[in-house]
Amino acid sequence: MTKLGIIGGSGIYQMAGVENAQWETVETPWGAPSDAILTGQLHGTDVAFLPRHGRGHVYTPTNVPYRANIDALKRIGVTDIISVSACGSFQDHMAPGDFVLVDQFIDRTFAREKSFFGTGCVGHVSVAHPTCGRLSDACLQAGTDAGITMHTCGTYLAMEGPQFSSAAESKLYKSWGCDVIGMTNMPEAKLAREAEICYITVAMVTDYDSWHPDHGAVDVSDVIRTLQGNGTKAADLISRLPALLDQRPTTCPHGCDTALEHAIMTAPDHRDINLVAKLDAVAGRVL
Ligand SMILES: CSC[C@H]1O[C@H](OP(=O)(O)O)[C@H](O)[C@@H]1O
Ligand SMILES: Nc1ncnc2[nH]cnc12
Image 1 (cartoon, helix red, strand yellow):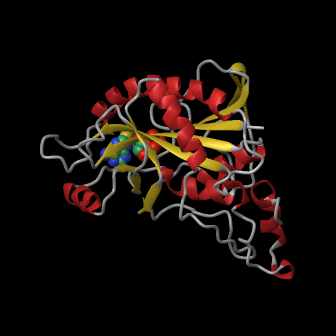
Image 2: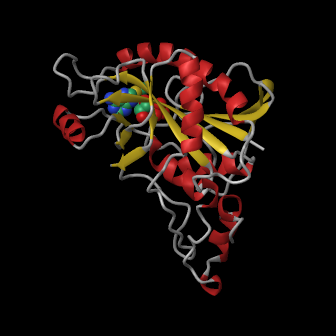
Image 3: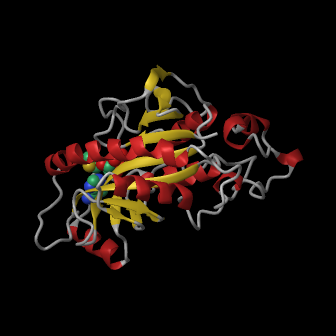
């Protein structure tokens, strides 16, 4: 059974159309998530919506409690996460208002906890293909049906922030072949993989960062203006997903939900029982 998690980024703090909606407080061994989680059904499919920065936009990209957020979603049974995120673009043809289905990341963040594992329970998962092709296909169809200009793949540069990039950084990332830039999807995608949850980033282009000769520096007021249009489009895309994702295969064909199968290195008699206890939701299947 699908339970669809939606992580709403900048400008997305609510989700309309959810039946039996209630804000649930979820506690985790990794602290409190960014906010309570809105649960209910969308066109008959169980959904759980979490505003990444909290209602009122409280958490900076660095301070978002990424581990608590992913643990909380796993703990309440989420199988699939759609991360809806604002981004800058490094490509002329990925214009403000377009949506990019991210399939690769370059992680340049440096001030965040990036793993549920640690001393006393060491685990290594593959993030060679960090997003789920099944979710990407569904988002492509939903977005196209909603009349959104969709790009089927793209590399997302995750920066620490909260300041935007300098022009030199922006040109460097473009020269690396990156397509979009944001501040939040790492370590979120890595943690979702550790938690064996399928994950896709729907990156909503709001600006051209600071490389473009015909566009000035990024300005939050421009970002917000574009986000207001993007938010409506994102809601339309999401409302079409239940019909496409309700029939979940017993196991993800891309292996997202079996990522921990051979991941844990620490011998059973050397494991830290406190850490193992904290991993109950995320890795209980294999511990
Ligand atoms: C409001 S512009 C910068 C801000 O927007 C993006 O957030 P999110 O990924 O949660 O939509 C970006 O990563 C920055 O945090
Ligand atoms: N240019 C940009 N850089 C980083 N994060 C962003 N979010 C939206 N636009 C962005």
